[in-house]
Length: 448
Image 1 (cartoon, rainbow, N blue to C red):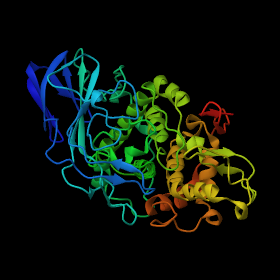
Image 2: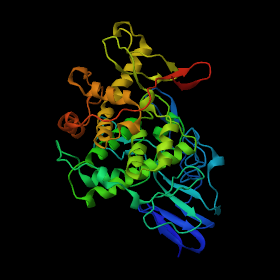
Image 3: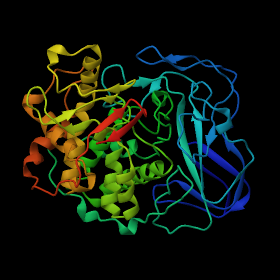
Image 4: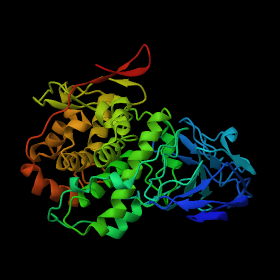
């Protein structure tokens, strides 16, 4: 029984003591309904209106606006707006929770702490490419409090923070034997560092909006899809190493929790459209959770979801004879496939699309390798992604270095690929083959 609980410097205070506890990932639950009389740091206006920030293309993402800092939200449906910080141009004051707040059963309350200075170091600063190790993002950190009708089992994962259904998944059902135990190839990153990357929830409910890059709390998560994919690829391949289970367990639980959250996001209407590098990296955590838990609800969500990395890969006939191709599909509007054409004839739009192919390419090999090491290719159910990964990682298909980056996979990922890709036995393919095309009439992407 407690009248307040705290996590990541966020403190929720109730009107009286309630039964409370923590899920296996450390997030708090409370048996309710409950009245949250206040949260600290307190939400509200700031004496400092803040400064603006623009994207690399010159579009405004933040502006001077003092109305709200340290905001809280309840996310029943994914939208393009948020109620955390008014400096962001996607701020909607109607989404900011006002205290005291009567919190109903089966509700998740997300409370944030805003940054007071900018720019600040990003979570993945140790692996970021030149000049990307700091960001002017609005939020510093955030935590989630879940209200349930009764105490959950002790081995429960936190239910998804998005949506109205608070589905409980139990760690006792995990299939730990699916994780390989192979010697490390190359030098893996520090376990404590990578475990810290995934320690806090990654909030991904801002629907299809590039302003997300300035929204996600910096101490919780990366804010760009390329790093979503890079981080989960590195972590997943580390989970395949021959190390004690006590070292693997915290990282594995966090990655499974992310998959559960992605399940909830799909239920709440989230779709990860193809849009350059913004929304890649979201499918594998859900595939991973579905394999580890073998739960039909998670498997169904994979079929219902729309994932950028699938929309961007397909089987076709490339100009140079390639069979597994990459397409932007959408980038500020519908984009026809460009790899089927002679590169000498590409217009500026097609050159931009290929630039994003180079941007996203270093992420694919690690995700594909982790999935294959867990015999998860059929569960992923989009073979073009795997064949394209083979193509990208082949020496003859290596592109020129990406400006500010390497144009290649992270060193540990590359070493693991070199050591183990050739040793993976053939496994079942996916059941369907799809190519996603953006329909100019409906302005929706359709699988063909």
